[in-house]
Length: 422
Image (cartoon, rainbow, N blue to C red; front, side):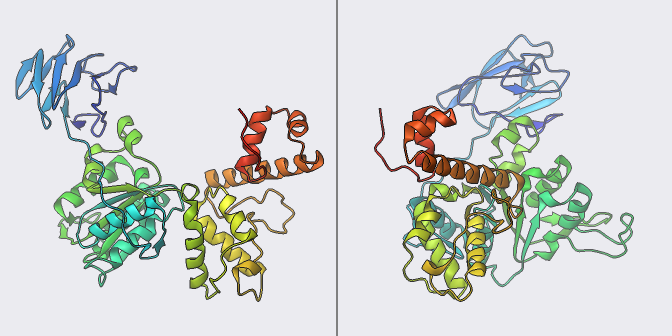
């Protein structure tokens, strides 16, 4: 990974031989004008790495000496042009035995995927280790942070959450690090930043992948030094904060493109895991529904029947957040209902609005678009099959869709339970 120079933060995996240089088609593309188009190649050889200069103009240097070919170990630094590369071990997946518990804080689940996460959280909670949580929108990343806080020795301290993606850089700077009076136009009084407000407790940084390079650099310094300097201040202040960071996407591609610093990633991912989407753990839906009903003082007995079947067959682009919204909407539409079976479950948000597609304005654009497509597919398939009296071949012909693909679509939406065909 690049640790110094104009491309700090860019990195590439050394699972196979990789070439670094300025050419656009190679593995690690640099912008340093003193680096040749194809400058060097690094090849993994057992537990070491073979570095070969590719007849570059300005050479490859190791420990101050120019080299043509050299075998080095992990941790070695190489100088090319104004750029310093370092060979760093990648984080390894943590192997733990699944927890026997079916919940951790407000998170519930009985699937193997969730019980493995509970096991990691149980181990992480007593420590101050920084945690990086990835996962789709609505999977419960903030619930993870709150659960870690409540299960930790910091539970009596503050829990502060910051949505880093919702603020422009100038405001995010002030929100995270604070400012002093007069630091900029409109700064009429001192303001404590999130790090100071979370002192003695836990700071949750959501949408971290969207912050600028300048803010990334400041975050790295705070995490390393445990000191924060408000905007416009002369002195730093020590802070005692546990950080839990979250991003909806894997940061690997952002690191490779240079938009996210690899050193900050490694500092954040002392413990890192991905929350699975709800569609990949449908066995957890009854448990989640029971938990949500219990919090709303409704009867949790008899979680079965057509209502549960509908919830299990839905794709859930908005994940647990969408499931919660569906249940809340059903409770509103079912006055007096005390049992799950009595709820009027509607999977479209715009109930009775005349908008058949039910545009979900309570979800981010991408998830809302997927929900609309989900409703369109299900409605189209159901109506066409009804018109052709469940004749699969006739419906597929009218739709202009291959019969096998049509059957696959029907099975996806729970509208076909016949045997598979070769």
